[in-house]
Amino acid sequence: MKRSKLQRGRAWNWTPLPIFVFLLIPETVQAADRITLRSLDSITDKSVKSFDEDGVRLDDGSLLGWHKIDRAKIANNQADFDLLLKELGEHLFRISERLAVGDYKDLLPHAEALYPRYKKRRSRTAYMVLQSLMWARLAAGDRERALEPYLRCYELLRARHASTKQLPGQRRLQLDPKTCMARELVPIWFDSDAARTAMPDVFQAIADMATPRPPGAYVYYAALALAAGDEKTAARFLLHLSKSEQPAIVELKDILTAQRQVVTGNHAAAISQLSSRLKDLSPAHKPLALYWLGMSKMMQAANGSREAGLLDLLRIPANHGEAHPVLAAAALFKTMNTLRESGDALGSVAVRNELLLRYGQTHFADQAKSQ
Image 1 (cartoon, rainbow, N blue to C red):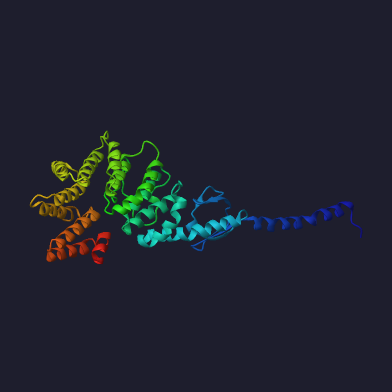
Image 2: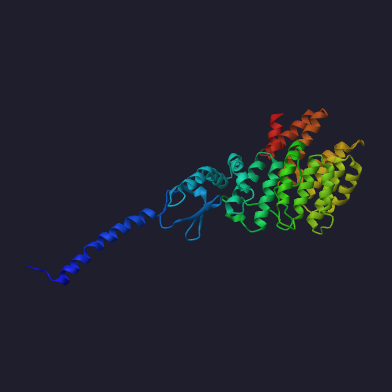
């Protein structure tokens, strides 16, 4: 039986259609990106639009952190993607995990490895690296080198490129956004060699800040310069604070001026200035004033001044130890050594025991253990 021309036309038109559709489907599927996360979940309904050190940008506008990615198959730039994932992914994952549990010492090598790449970037990932490095260096007793990443953290937060709430874990940076002073980074340093080494990087971090620069940056650098024995540089930076009317900065300027007098050997002037200001100082700065008051008295030649200085130092752990553990530990460590050098072995041991018991996690406790 012969078919009509219409039937033959319909048969000819119908046959290639499924083949055409079948050929299109595999091509679409093959072009899709597939990202496997460390959580073992997969992202298959989004494509990678771009990527850099700050993360992987997807076509829906979201940004995926490298620390969340285990592997991926993408349509474009696979080799560059794999290289960044290899260089950044594991380090960022370890930093994130250690921050979540508060293990700051163990994240140090990972933060150190990434810091050169992130210290001038402006992103959430950069903030995580900078903040982790500050805390890791503090945990390792490297307070001098903790200052540079802190100043860069402050600048990221001030420009609102990141937020402290975005970090893994419970710890949050406590700082005054107006002054740049951080509660956990009192402007005092104890290692002159480390202070001298840290000064160039800290200076560059301040130079990189947007103007007007916060007064706290000058406070920190002046204190670092005094610790390094660079009195002239400290004096120059203290001039930046001369017109400040912020109460916190005025108090710190006065304390640093007294510290400068201690460094230059003018102990009587330091004692006079600190003694007259002590009762009016805020609780946040009184322990720092007590430390330099005690140090200046101990360095003075007058009879009884050493004992008076030790009492001032011991007032720090007695009255301010919980809020200022670093200063309290430093005061106890100085007292311990002073008593030992003067032949008071029993007193020195008693102070050492208090240092280890109350501030066993501090760098000064580690130093006491090693003696």
